[in-house]
Amino acid sequence: MLGAGNLLRMMHTLYVAHQSRGIITLTFDPCKPPSSSIQIENTVQAGYLPQWLTLHGDYVYSMSRTQFPDESSTSAGIFAFEKAELSKETGPPIHDGNLIFVSNTSSNGLGGVYCGIGNNGQTISAANINGGTVSIHPLSEKGQIGEATYVFNYNHDSEVQHNPHQAAFDPSGKWMLVPDRSADLLRVYRVAGPNNVTQVHVVKLPHGTGCRHVTFRAFSPTRTFAYLVSENDNTVRVFALDGVENAPECSSNPPSDKIEVKLLQTASTLGPGSNRTPPARVHLAAEVAISNDGRHFYASNRDTKSAASDTIAIYSVHPESESQHLEYLGQSETHGKIPRHFSLSPDPGNRYLAVANQVSNTIMIMRRDTDTGLIGDLVGEISLGDFDKTTKKGPVAVVWSSE
Image (tube, rainbow, N blue to C red; front, side, top):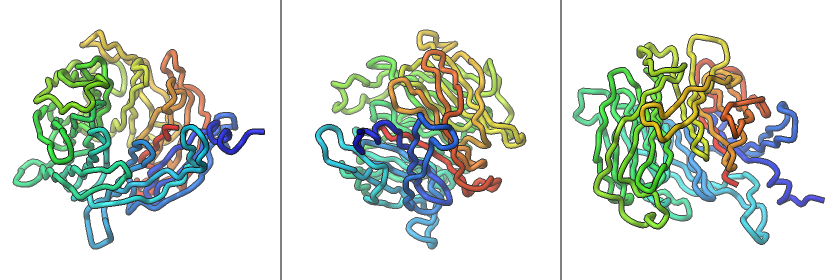
């Protein structure tokens, strides 16, 4: 007979940032039919309109949109939770998926949309899109978030509107990229710790780009690829970051003085080629991810006019080719509307892809072919509420627990 620990290890745990319900813990059992394979296990509150989730070790971090610590404030909040342990048996700890509140603090800006962990877990960043700020905070091993050591206010004394949508760390944790959506800028920071953060590059993008999110793939000890998705022109731009230190033995070294940022390719998220769309905000690319083996890349598309299912664009990755780094393979349905976020399961083969359909108010899980990279059958589905055209109630992030 299987014990509780073995039963838990057969299932997958996911966390959902749901704007009207809080942080929802789900379990997914791929052996069950799609209609019953996802179950709600727990919900915790994480401020007003939770917007993002980041996992690091035994901790889950989230961002609220505004009203932190209460309605008198327009600032967003950063929240830390610890995964609750089910038992203390020999071997890796077993968690039951429940979350225990650890700490929170102000993100120093309106419109929290992202938080990220870098610098070997010692630094947490927060992006506030409406306030035009990015804040940097120290982070302890026990998930305690300190007061901001830096608040970069891009709208201070600026005639241009700035809307940072992310503040993402590269795999080394020593470089932070900030897509500034309205200003069409990609900012690059050197991060030697929460008390030593310096802007070293500003990449100017074509007018009407609307850069949104970036993800990374370490290619060699000194080169990392950065994949920047933009929602106004519906493209992915591939950059090479040269001069980074990805080797494990260099993890404790301070970052180099500078890195080189080189644009390699621009690819459409809506089809083959590199065509940009005008910034009409009919199609809005949203999120990106790359498989663990580095062979396949994905980008979600939001169609604001059509009632049909939205899509995930699929590419093969060719790191040896600079101009044809991404090769378009096709599109797969998200089985819902407005896929604000999606993520690949953390197993070595990334066998599953989970999508948060914001307007449909659903979480959908599809099987992924580990050889071809194509997305296959629907293996899990759950409704979290009514269809919501206001975009103020549904899920905006879904992430897999690392265990």
